[in-house]
Image 1 (cartoon, rainbow, N blue to C red):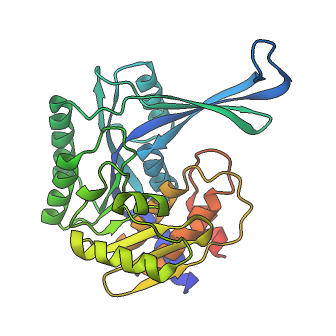
Image 2 (cartoon, helix red, strand yellow):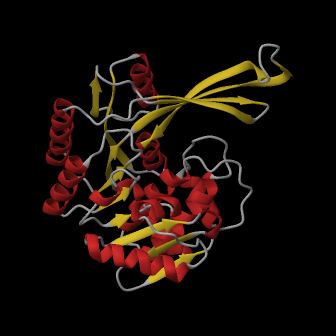
Length: 327
């Protein structure tokens, strides 16, 4: 792999504007010390030392796009609630444009509370609605997407699905249709409920579990030819251009209808895999928009995903970190 070519692409990330559409959330952390068990129940008592919020879901994808040096535009629906205010404050603090955010009085802002004691996650509490958008919210989101596409030169669209209701067959088809008409590449990170609705897009990026669930098949994660054949059959059926399947410790596999490549995982000190998929789709999308081959873009994304796994919590990687790793 030509690392100088990859470095040149990274240095040109700043030229690109990426529209990120999907489910956003707040990753809220409560950290502290554990030195006793509660007398009320057999559970540890966490003495709180710190609280902080981070962008999660599609918002973390947008943040990765930003820290890699490109320009993200985030489009989603959040609640008209206190958590929604926190979400917009996070965007403001990170100097990210809120123009694509719609607020709703009918649903909460998705928030995942993680309680961490002695550097170990003790509990996660999710506050969310997984109901589909109302007809009015769906129309508002559709109009917002088209307005952004009409007003801004978009180099690629990332569809980030967490099965929280923001995306459905109508919105997914709208994105694919508008992107095809405007000749904009689309990459998508699917979840189970909407898995079959993605058609006519550039890159489809399920992880191994999502691929099995979405296709209702049993596969073996280190049988790469078997996975590739399954993926290629699906590409033909759905008229998808490429598929990237992340395989955890077995690396990743990328294919088009004619060829496939397996990229082994790099040896890392794994601290936390949270958010690695967000980093992978951000990096590979930017790589493809700059003319990297699918194997080159996947190789770069594999490095980026490995780097983020060395960090605790849902955090992005930076352009400089990626460049230093290639050096």
